[in-house]
Every structure is written in structure tokens, then in C-alpha cells.
Image (cartoon, rainbow, N blue to C red):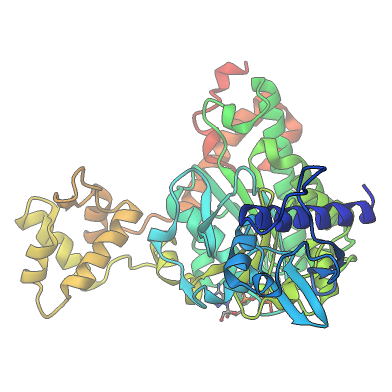
Length: 494
Ligand SMILES: Nc1ncnc2c1ncn2[C@@H]1O[C@H](COP(=O)(O)OP(=O)(O)OP(=O)(O)O)[C@@H](O)[C@H]1O
Ligand SMILES: [Mg+2]
């Protein structure tokens, strides 16, 4: 459909909503003879610059609707409902004209809180889902393994792109272990993904900081995608979730795509993103420069979900979203996205410094794992209360050393980390696990990120031997994946 036809359809749909509402409010009179209603007349104009639609009413043909009725705010509210939440009003200046904002929701976005911290209880249930932020209709959930598996986020510096990537990574890491999720991070700015991210047990490769490292990382991700494709072919399945033991989701985040514009690495990235759906490869790519140079048609086609933060100009907004509007997002963290057929404005969740509390719970702790008082707490729980981590008892015993509040927080953190058990009933106490007991005995923290990797290389060798030497060469020097552990017993191939 050409642009004019599209504009005409859009104008028509608004006009229908306007007229139907007038009819519902009994403001229109029926024609005495021909039947039907007497309809007002207006000239409809689509203003793409201001992103509004205007109807200039023909004052000679108001269909008998008196002026004060047009200016009735109750009518406007009803119009707004009929127009799927688009702001609408009537101006009374040189005649009467109706103005409709084309994008639903923007004006009320101001009422969203300016800061919504990322906290564990914001994370939605459900495999590989995360909370993007809050819209006026509630939390906006993205499915990183499904409809939002390839995200492009753009916007001027300081808009909130890196923060969004961190939020996505941390939320997924908080609910999926390294056997279900692996992350590959490119941070060429080198300041955004701090030490907590280097310590994620889910890292597929070390965080890439230089262009060379980034290029290598992108290449390795693509090799992994090809390796997965080969395994899936062998197993005769066409989607990674159909495997007896699916691969972990491999999430690749690239903070600044402009660095890679028109390089071979970008071509590889686009290829991986385009073909990765079936193999559990997801991508989040950011860019400060939403220009045609960075977001060429291939990139746009490969990264289907677009999240825009504040843009400098209407043109930039258009380059990333296809329409204007993102230049009006007035503060960091406020994002405009087109999700599952709808425009959504949301205040994204703010991650604390170096990942905040959440990173603290998911990243591998730096040795020593336990502070002195923590060691005493664990010993007391083991020796005196049967291994149960009873917060009330511990608070009493360690009064003056640690508050009840801090104890509760610590218990929650240890539970998330798997160091305390999760009780079946809310009233039961958590129990100290063997792992935590070992730590209190001076054991080293489990550095899954590294140990896991080494131990996997042996397994990859085995499987590679079956699926073909070519794939193996690519795999040898890096960490591949929990799913290999049990999903494909070597015997099933031989
Ligand atoms: N969701 C949010 N809520 C509130 N403030 C935010 C949010 N996201 C980002 N900010 C603020 O904006 C600042 C910049 O965010 P961020 O570094 O994510 O921007 P960016 O788009 O990555 O910028 P650049 O393009 O320069 O890398 C943050 O330090 C924070 O103060
Ligand atoms: Mg950034």
C-alpha cells in the first residue's frame, strides 16, 4: 500500500470513531427520508511532523451538533476510549477543529515514576521473560526466547540503552542457571559493564572490550549457532526447545552497533540474529546513532523488536522506529517500543551501580566468599539449630553484630544463590546447604564460570567427535554449554 492510501485509511478510521461516538451519545439526528444519520463534514489532515491528525470541521455542516457539545470534555474522554487511548481534543479558534495524537499513551507517560529500581520481585515468572519497565497499563514483559528475541535499542547518549541491556542480563541470570542461560557481552566503551558482569557464572566468553575481542566474540557466537544447527539436524528437530535437553539460551548483547557498521563482524552478527531463532540465540543490540548507515535494512530485518530511548531529532526517531515521537521522550529510561502490534511507552527499570543488589546475588562472589560474621552465623545454625537458618534465633544470638533486617536480606540472597534451601512453606526455616557449610569451613567459592568451562571442553570433544571434526575445531577453545551434558548422549549418534 502506498503512503497516501495508508494515510487515508488512518484518517478514515479516526473519523469513524469520532462519528460513531457522536451517534452513541445521541448527538446525531436521523435523516427523515433516506434513513441513516446526518453526519458532520470535516477536512482530515495527517501531520506527520507533529504526529497528529486534525479534522477541520466545516462550520456549515455541523450536523446540528451545537458548539458547546463539541467542547464537552466528557465527549473527548469517550472519543479517547474509542480511539484506543489516543489523546484527543477540540480547539475553538478559527472555527472548530479536532486534534488527535496518533500515538496512544504518550501524554500520560509523564505520570509514570521517573525512577523504578530493578528489584528481584519485578522479574516475571516464565521462561526467559523479563520486565522491560512500567507502562501506564502495568509492567511490560518481554520474552527473550520468543517474540522479543532480537532487540535493537537506539537513542541519544544517556538515554538508557546500556542500563536496559544490564537489566535484561541480570533479570535472566537471576532466574536461570548457567545450564539454562549463557550470555555474551560486548562492551567496547569498557565502562558500562563493571566487575559484577565479569563475574557472572553465565558468561559464554569473557566480556569483550576491544574491537578485536568483540569481533572474535561475534564470530564465536555464530560458530556456536552453526554447531547447534548441526546437532539439531542430527537429532531431527527444528527448534531448540524440542530437544530432550534444550541448549541454554545464548544471549548476546552489543552495546554500540555503530562501531561495527559496515564491517564483516556486522554481517556475521546479522546472519546469526537472522537465523538464530530456532537455535536459541537471542540478541540485544544498541546504537547511539540511529541512522541509515548503522541501521541498514538487513539490520532492521534481523532485529525485529525496536526499543527507542530519547532521540535527538524527529529524523532519528524515524530512522529507528519508522515514525517520530522518540524525540519527545523527555527523560532517561523512558522508552517507546512497538511490541506485538502495539505502541508502548514505558519507564524502564533502573539498575543500580555495578548491577546493584541483583548483580550481587547472581555474580560469583569474590573470595573470601563469607565475611567473618557470616561464617559464625552458618556455624551457629549448623551446631545449635540443626542446620536451620532461623532468622529470629540468629538475630537474637548475633544482636549487635547484624540486624534482623540484614539477616533476612542475607537469607534471601543466599537462597537465590542456592546456598540455603527454599522451604516448602513460608513459615519453615531455610536450611544450610552442603555448599554453604563447605564455604564456612574455608572452602573456595564455586567459580562456575571457569570450572564449568574447563569441564565442558572434554564433553565437547566427545560429542564433536561424533558430529564432525569441523564443528569441534570451532568449539575447543571456549565454553559451550550445559545442554550438551545430558541432552545428547554420544550413543545416540553412534
Ligand atoms: N531506567 C532508567 N531510569 C532512570 N534513569 C535512568 C534509566 N536508565 C538510565 N538512566 C540514567 O541515565 C544515565 C545513562 O544511562 P545509560 O548509560 O544506560 O545510557 P546510554 O543510552 O547507554 O548512553 P550512551 O549512549 O552514552 O552509552 C544513567 O546513568 C542513569 O542515571
Ligand atoms: Mg551506553
